[in-house]
Image 1 (tube, rainbow, N blue to C red):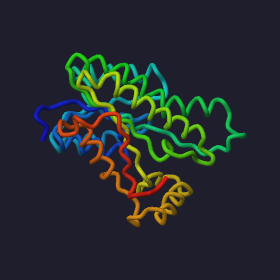
Image 2 (image 1 turned 30 degrees about the vertical axis):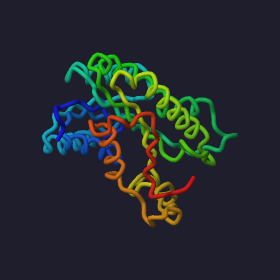
Image 3 (image 1 turned 90 degrees about the horizontal axis):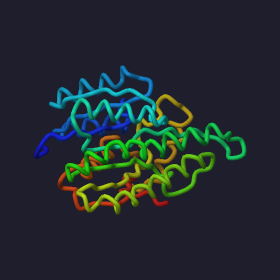
Length: 248
């Protein structure tokens, strides 16, 4: 259990990796602020699960691809709990578009959700972390942060930039008791279950993983929980690859 109850804001926490992170942080003794853009019922289900683990919860719906929504989401968390001690930027979109067919609107949308949201939310949460002299920011990347992907140049650019943002914040705020790290998951079982083509693509990656299986959302959550804990205080500015040994 945590030494004291802190508050964690996890974007995109209604399902999959975000859900697992929220529940793991609730299990560690933290309050959790859940976020989704559309499916409030999914967030309500996760909130019920987190409350059974002893957490106080808040559902702050909103589109993190909009600066105004990020400000409101963080504001609701701050108004309810007084602080956001742990920020997990998990929400992301990963559309497939050949580079020459991609329009500017899609490019801008992916960068807003997958990159700018981390900037906007960090700007809202960092002042309170600085005041306390304690904070954790954990960004979620994926293998797009390490290698380019055919048909996903916008996602790869956003995730590469999120890695750069992570390193910069780690240097700027590390001396104030705030660590910033990024977790890069490999192929995860159940991811994109609502998209048969993408689900099949993820399943096909199994043969490239030395452990011979897909990862579990709970395994990503365990890495995030370590980075968010007092035990992970000396880990700063790092990319933690949780991918079963997949080589890039």
